Length: 242
Length: 335
Image (cartoon, rainbow over all chains, first blue to last red; front, side, top):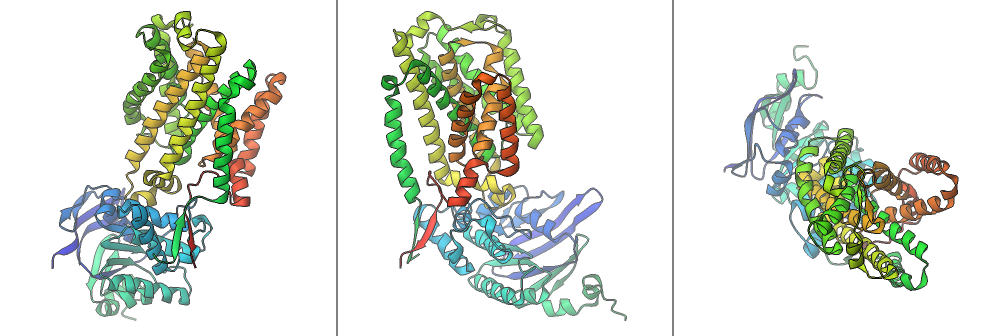
């Protein structure tokens, strides 16, 4: 099966800080991939490069058979890449429903009743329907995280990028979020998920990629990766020899 | 989705529409019930209301905080003079043409200033406006630095008698304000308007959801500049005299407009209306106090910015959840 997303030799640095160092990986259609790495490893930057809010210095990004390396963020969203932000960026002056409607009309290109119905459907799935008329600026953290997910889903993505969407949630909240993400994935949406809440990540993803200092240092089955000495040392800060 | 309906109008918005239509009829009949001075004042109010709506669209929604829209007010004013005197056009045609020309001029200007961000953008727009002022001051045929008056023959094309002229100029101002407000309202209500509102709240998230930020901003800038030039033409049709300093005044056409939008409530449609009424109320009350008037305006602006950053309308809306222009979507369950 051809890769839905193909990242190859991606390079990006801010001065001396390298956030992507010859990063290469493929994600097949329908897959769920997790990305692990310590703070500052370049995980969010990788998302910024994939979605087009950052331009790479070198390397290429292919999506669905098209080279999108130089495409704008808006164009990439229209092709089917949507993301949630680690720090929620709600359209604070608009209602929850309107936030979803932006995704449905601009990202998915729907209009009229179709857009409204789609937005309502996504809100139901993410559990925000009861808050549809609330101003997004007044939401709690969990609701904001769900809104991030809602907006991205409303854009009808082929590839959904989740950036630490489980961070800061209680156990119960986290479990219900995992269920939502699982059901999105089971419908065939490809997912790449950055997460520090490892058990949440392992509940969904089929493959893990570990990065540090912008470099991919491990990739493979979650179980194998979590057991590897290199990952334990770099990511968990445990010295494997002790 | 079954069971759920999405509506946009509210009881307040329907009431506002009825009151608005009624007010429109009363205001349109003003030449028969208002005195000359009142007519003039009301015309000025409409033109300021239009400028405020347009600046609000740019700064409050598109994030284009310009302090140089006087460039287009002056441009529109000068086009009225140039196209009537040298082109032989009817004043109304000249004013509309001035808007079209301003749209054309605004594209290369945008290409230049859109490279600047935030405060630099604001300063850039001001510099451009100064360039406009200095350029028009060079044109001797239009009176150079000291300006010129609209020839009597052209003034008479608006109306042979003074009363007819004043009524016509009043209706033009009222009509322009209506067209501006209706256009801004319909635009914000559309899908593109939803995108613009998203840009207002978070550019990063908007870009990530498929909104072309640069193009949306350019469209807003061009349309706002064209309308601003039309309003400029109408302003100087009222004044019948133009000079570079009056046409490109940063005080008259930008500082007062920013005051109106900020105290009324930036980023809302209702804000500029409330702001315009407050501004003119203050101006009429304080008119006899000379420079104290400007100091009071300054104090009011500072207090509002500190105590109610979303303006007077922001206070009202948060308190009563009101909306006169039905832009919001409301979701409710039918059952």
